[in-house]
Amino acid sequence: MAKGRRYFGDGLAYLNPSDLKGRLIAIEGTDGVGRSTHIEQLQEWLEVQGYGVITTGWTRSNLMSKTIEMAKQGNILDRWSFSLLYATDFADRLEHQIIPALRSGFIVLADRYVYTAFARDAVRSGDPAWIRNVLGFALVPDLVCYLRIDVETLALRVLESKGMNFWESGMDMKFGTDLYESFKKYQGLLIEEFDRMAEEFHFEVVDARKPMEEIQDALRAKILPLLRNERRLAPKQAVQAGGESAQAATASPDS
Amino acid sequence: MTPPTHPPAPSAFTFDQPHTFPGKLIVVEGIDGSGKSTQLLLLKKWLESQGHNVIFTEWNSSELVKETTRKGKKSKSLTPTTFSLLHATDFASRLYHDILPPLKAGMIVLADRYTYTAFARDAVRGVSQGWVRKVYSFAIRPDLAFYFKVPIEVAIDRLLGGTRGHFKYYEAGMDMGLNPDLKESFRIFQSRILAEYDKIVAEYGLTVMDATEEIEEQQEKMRAVVTGALEQYKPKRGGHGKRAAIFWRRFGVSQPK
Image 1 (cartoon, one colour):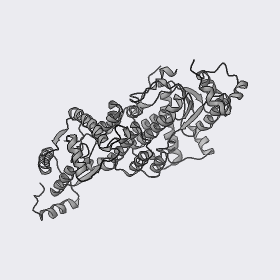
Image 2: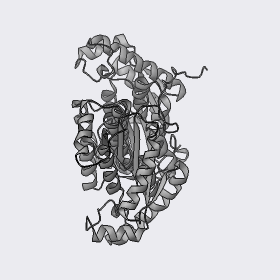
Image 3: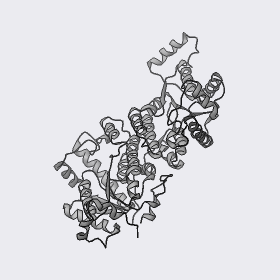
Image 4: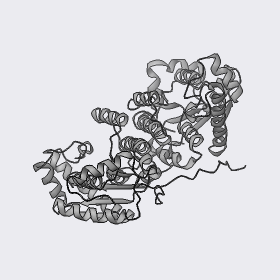
């Protein structure tokens, strides 16, 4: 699998991706669908089995996280700056977190990936081509799990937890002044875009309306075939490989 | 399986086509020490003396991104790709806030460095040439783009002996580990950029200026080219435009058309 690793588009001209032996798994889905909870559990599950895991999250780069926060406070965010700020954040994480981890044989769990940027830009511009070109330097993941939800259920779930905010409601798109209506309209458009991409990029679709445990089981079932020690490591043996030795276990050469 | 469909893209401007706004966009390009900023300043003075409303914008100058670039440079964590994207973000923000509105309003916008700087510089830093052009495909194509061509030794002499007296770290490409000596590094890095500019001049038809000529000679030529480009241009002014014309008349400078 790692041998066939490639970029979406033009790629990083100064970096050959063929020696990146780890696994890159993206968990996609719209705002408030439960991605981060599941990623935490997946990380735990994988580490218990002895796999080295790093997680990387949208806007969490050292370089850009503060800048993006500042930008969101103000209103400099025209469509291009908006997308380019996130693209810069992604590039920083790709080169400083994701690629080094893959080179060392880690499993990288990405909370959102370029598809989030594709969806947000396409919804704002109606032009899917530009942002895909911009993010042409991204690595194609080994697996994309898409947590799919309908907008009615999503609205309830978000209200039950942290409530609706300006950006997740797409208030910058000026659909109107009603937060709830704007949320539904914006999130509806995003979900449409994700559905379209699910087909185009062959996402593994997981129904996010189901109970937590079922979703987690479904995610694990999708990930399992990617693991190189799938057969050797039964859950009981895995306990011994946890903790400090987690990284050593994944350092064995690719068979 | 049905192919995914998107709604048709809205008719947007692109870098491949001339723009249709009533204003004019004039840009200058060249390496540090080519004298392009001096020439642009003189052009601005002249245009203003003609009664034009002129907006000036400069590479890498939007507050938000400038701060981040500074931070990234300080921690030396910028890669060729993040370096390129940060400048693109800065450009996008300036295009939206500083360049597009005056062009739509029919004003003259002067830009010190434009997308060509990114094309030249980022290519030398190692990103794909095709990619950086795609990133900037949303840019407005300028009505006039001057390239101030200068031999590397002349630029070095000007920077050392003249206005600045030193080389900037990133302008010298010191982050690329070309040579530990600042001057040598500048020579190698900027020579490569000069070579890229030569390709860009051919690709985009930039107006080449001989930047070794005397300042006033260059300016005279520049004004002649701009006069030609502004032939069809109908200036639009707010109330203060006229007052500026009267102001300049006191100095015996010719009146606006």
